[in-house]
Length: 277
Image 1 (cartoon, helix red, strand yellow):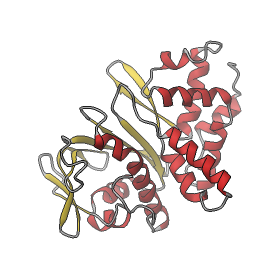
Image 2 (cartoon, helix red, strand yellow):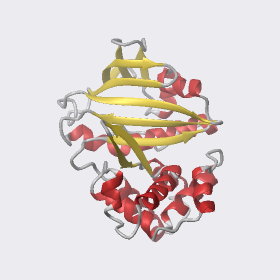
Image 3 (cartoon, helix red, strand yellow):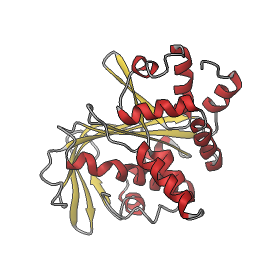
Image 4 (spheres, one colour):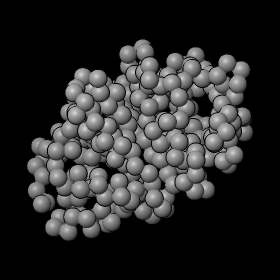
């Protein structure tokens, strides 16, 4: 089970993020291997696992072999990892599935669409003992362009349900997303390091199902990757898997996909119409 060709690994890890067809090919290639599918299934059952915990799912494979498979899943964007204390935890990332779903859903017969939707739903599963959401997407843009997309109200209105963001973007400043004159999300800037990192609190103020939940935390991290950038969004600091935690899991993947579409094509996704789903 431990064999994985150097060419296979090199192709996946160095794959270009400039061509959407290449990105999709990386996702399908990563899913083609049964060991990698098993790792994804394990993360679906228990998100946020260490290398040791994932290695236990493949007892016939060395830790190095599992690491190589995780690198391919990471290169395809299906898995992302975060350092927590002394451990590195691995999470499912639903954004690539969202992108494939949005591009191809109308082009195949219902049986194919249903299968793709089921795959998307499985990979978007909920965290169990660690209430986190971690999302990643690669975008053909500079860090400055990504920062502008996050902080410019003219741009957020084009990919984020026509909402206009408002803040001074300094630590301690308030954060608001407005639709017309109504505040739909309110928060505070906890950390701002343009164009690399932004941390805010996040609380829904309009939806009666969500507005009684305490504020959570959203972290945006921008890393240059050659001619593209890796955008990581972490939504955490939930007291439990409350209504807000459950509501944002599919919403963020949709809005990040819409941001990517806007920056790369000039148009956000028409389906990005609701805060929650």
